[in-house]
Amino acid sequence: MNELDFERFLKNKFSFTRGQGIGDDASVIYSEGTQQLITTDLLIENVHFRLRDIEMKELALKAIAVNLSDIAAMGGIPHYFYLGLGFPKNLGIKELKQFFQGLKNGCQQWNLELAGGDFSKSSQLCISVTMVGEAEHPVYRQNAKDGDLIGITGQTGASALGLKLLLSGKSIKPWSTRHQKVVPCLQEGQILAKYANSMIDVSDGLVIDLKRILAASGKGGHLYYENLLIPRAMKRICREYHLNEYELVLSGGEDYVLLFTISPENELQLRQEKISYRVIGEIQSKQDQLTITHNGKTIQTENNGYDHFNMKS
Ligand SMILES: [Mg+2]
Image (cartoon, rainbow, N blue to C red; front, side, top):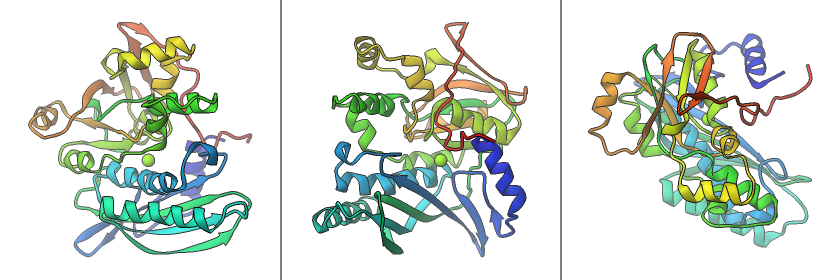
C-alpha cells in the first residue's frame, strides 16, 4: 500500500462534511466569513531525526516550521498551535526547558501562540504539532490546468545532501544547516495564493510531491531538470562524495519550498511581485504521466521520494 492508496482508503471510510478534509497540505473548514486551515505533523526520534544531529531548540523550531510550511502551501496565515509531546526518560529537565525555549522563539519569530496540548512519557521523543490558521483563498492540489506552468520557490536537494553527510558522520555547512533549519515560505505562499491554480510544499521529494499535484488534478506534466537551481558547490560535493545528484534533487525531500502551477497569463503578473521562483516545467493533459528531461534526454527515476506508507498489502 502506498500513500495515495492509503489516502483513498481513509477518504472512503471517513467522510468529511465541514469543508475539505483528507488529501491536501491542510484541511479547510468553512466557517462564517473565513476559511480555517488545520494541519498536523508528527516528528519521531530515529525516523525523522536523531538526537545527536540536532539541538532541542532547533528541533522545536523545526516541529513548528514543517507545519507552517503546510499552511504556506495552502496560501494561508498561521495563528496558533497545539503540541503533543512524548518525552523519553533519558532526557532531563534541561532538555525539556531547551525544547520549550525553542518553541517560545518560534512563537516570537512567526507571531504564533501555543493554545494547548498533551504530555506523556515515551520510549522515544515524539513531537506532534497541530497548527491552525486561515486563508482567504486556499490553494488546493487539485486545480492544476492544462498548459499551466510549474514553478518552484527555491532549491531542492540541499536538505537531503545535508542529511546524507550527517548520516555518514560529516557535518558540512551550509548543507547540514539546510537539513536542521526549516524556513517556511509563508510570504511566498500568500503571494502565490493570488495567482496559482494549485500548490504543495516539497516535503517528501520534488517528484513525489509533483505527482501528488498531478494525481489530485488528473493531469500529467513535463519537468525540465536544467531549469532547476543547483548551485555549483552542490554539484562539486556530490562528485566528491560520490552522491547521486539526480536522486538528491528530484527525490531528496525536506526542502520545504513551494511547488505550484500557474497559468502563463498569471505568471506574467507574478513577475511584478516580490517573490523569487523558477519555472521548471508545464502541466499536460496526459493523466498521471510525468516526463523528466535534462537537456532533451529523458531521466528515469527509480526512487520518487519518501513514501511513509510504502508497506506490504
Ligand atoms: Mg505538505
